[in-house]
Amino acid sequence: MTASIPIEDYALIGDMQTGALVAREGSIDWLCLPDYDDKACFAALLHDRSAGHWTIAPVDGAHTCSRRYEDDSLVLRTRWQTSQGVIEVVDFMPPRGDAADVVRIVEGISGEVDVSTTMRLRFDYGRVKPWVRLADEPVGTSAAGSRSQDARHHAEPRPTVVSAIAGPDAVWLHADVPFRLEDEELRASFTVSEGEHVSFVLTHQLSHLPRPEPADPGRALEHTRRTWNDWAERCNYQGPWEEEVRRSLVLLKALTFAPTGGIVAAATTSLPEEIGGVRNWDYRYCWLRDATFTLQALLGAGFIDEAAGWREWLVRAVAGDPARLQIMYGLDGTQRLPESTLDWLDGYAGSGPVRVGNAAASQHQLDVWGEALDGLYLAREAGLEVTDSAWDLQRALLHWLEEHWTEPDNGLWEMRGPRRHFVHSKVMAWAGVDRAIRSVEDHGLEGDVEEWRELAARIHADVCARGYDESRGTFTQFYGSQGLDASLLLIPRVGFLPWDDPRVVGTVEAVARELDRGGFLLRYDTGADGGADGLPGDEAAFLACSFWLVDAFHGIGQTERAEELFNRLLSLRNDVGMLAEEYDPHTGRHLGNTPQAFSLVGLVNSALHLSRGRRTDSRDARGESAPHRSSRSSAG
Image 1 (tube, rainbow, N blue to C red):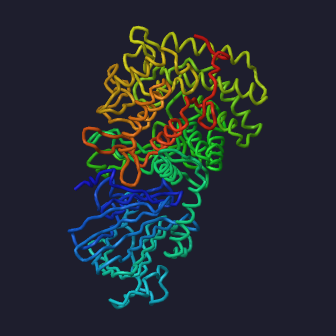
Image 2 (spheres, one colour; image 1 turned 120 degrees about the horizontal axis):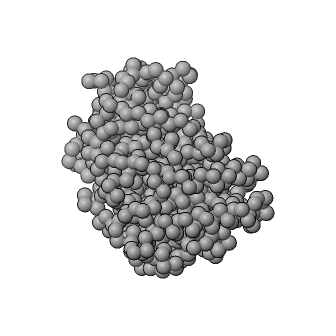
Image 3 (cartoon, rainbow, N blue to C red; image 1 turned 30 degrees about the vertical axis):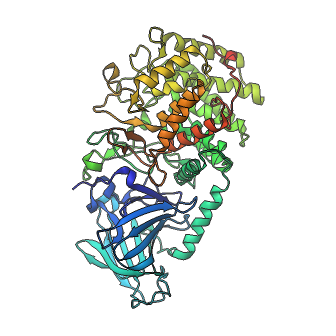
């Protein structure tokens, strides 16, 4: 039977190199080791429990549970109330040392509660069954070793070490209670009394390397709390949505790959945009389209180091032949991300195929040249360290853009249909040229400003002549299209036209009306123009685009509509503040990969805009208003 726990029932724990999804009912159903884009050893999320899971829960089926993160940390506490008493399960991943650790601690709060735990390890996304060995260790030598000395109701059990090895992967489970192997699963049963702690530590290492020392549960818990709370203290946002902004930033930090500074789009692959549909993609990579929005969110909240790390990742990723710029890269800047399907997995709620890799990486998307130039300009405006080589890179990107901006492309949303002249792509081409002009004028860099001004004016005139529908009073998805696109809301944000331009106001109103899905916003109408994306099926409201609409309402002076929509979007967060990619207003369910960085960034930026009460565009490093200066480089 295919697993179908609601997507919004999951919470994330992570160590800033990978993350696990923990269901409300106590099961870890997704974990890739050692990194986000590696193969999963728990993949029940995309099949059923036979693909791997780790569950800890009371034996008593008549229970209620609630959960929360501790303060501003990624330490998850789930409280179970049963007829026998109350326990809490503490789940976390300590910041990465020599190896990845998952720590789970069962704490007795009241009464005496019978608990069971079941683990099925399956490497390579559920396909590979490891060789499992059980070995009891003498009491006192357990690496978990945190069973409370205050617990006097039960005889002290013998701690256990379990090893599981297959191919390149090895894990060790250190537990305060003995395990048995039954029906290809590791199982243990125990009773927890008030004041007692029972700990489990799962440690991963490459199988050819020496067995690592596992984390000490108690010390690791304190270190993890301190690390997260100290980091969150740097947040300088003050406003009516402080809790929501801080939680979103913590989750965004968790999606950051610490060794390189890259930020994954989501922790998962193949969670569907439509239940039973085929719109299932691997989001465990870094998208250039997110660069400017992410930099704005981090800089606007005071996280300069993280913004600098993301900027450095961006420079390394786009270095090389400017003609081969991609829309996405691996966590370390890897370019080849071949897409394949895992046919042994049914997919979430039967929504196959399950994909790993992403073929869209090889698509031609004109907007990414503008996204890269915009992000690098924003970093320079913020005072982040800039080198001459970075400006040389930007000039190379601009030279390529000058020769190719007239070409059709696949568009921001990775359309798998025919290439078109997407309006957003052309607008971002203009933005890339505009940022080069500003770099010269505002920062004293060298470049042919007059030539670039002429180029910007040509692009601007082309978009206004061919991408605007006079009869409907709106820009369109692509030249000659009858459809609209949420990315049109970004026209004033990148400075292409001012917020009070009638064409902008008309476009905002048209997009809000025609792309409405239950009070939120679609990316585009999948049925318009005969189905421009080349895929069957439909999708739900796209949360990042709905936050763009918040910003657009605010930008055209409709603050009340902006705040009303923003508060409705906040109500879609799950009980621990997570947002997926999409939301289905008909079922009230999250859809798409989770947690989604684009959605979280949208939340933070909208809160910053509304709190400051100013119209913004992406040329301002901290999200504050900047004078509209497109007359320098545009016409029309």
